Image (cartoon, rainbow, N blue to C red; front, side, top):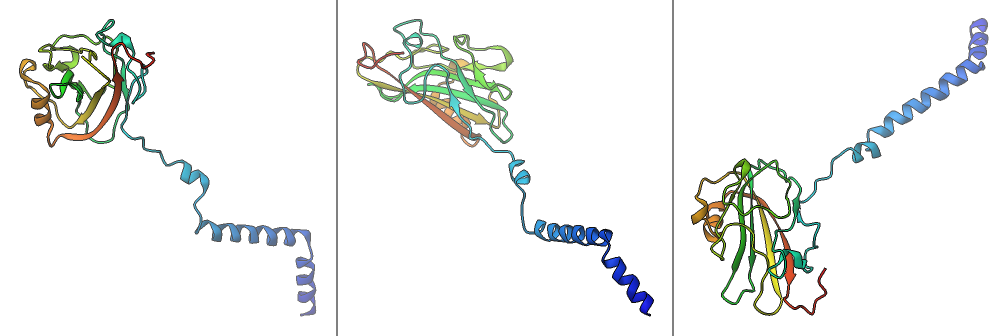
Length: 209
């Protein structure tokens, strides 16, 4: 019996025993804490969802639309960009109008059946009613297809570029599709929408870009 006690004392006093005891204690403590704590790596690995947003590299929302894109210059359409929204998006529709027009809301541009794979529209967009990939353009307040830029008769006007992510496409004829008809068709099919607002004043006191 004395021999056994002596052997235990020798074992507990050896460097090997001390090393095993301390490492076992560290492992036990780590496992206990991990049950009540989320690591920074686990938190950071969650992707951040971005809101659906319509932007333009040529002007910031609330600012002046450059003269190039108006009736006082080349009257070409500006470049537009957006990010892909969540959901089962089948197409996009774009409406540009001027609610400050003296005769009521004046529609400058209607585009629909923009494929879901698109994340923008190039500048100087064609004015044809039917384009590649099934894109169609509706009839504007000018009685024409395609973009017509700001041309306010007086004062400062606001121009609303409204983009709609839809769960469908439309087979409606271009010549009979204006803002009211397209808005009615989109009812119940809008997943999410975004708006970009530009301003313009002819012979402006505002500093044009």
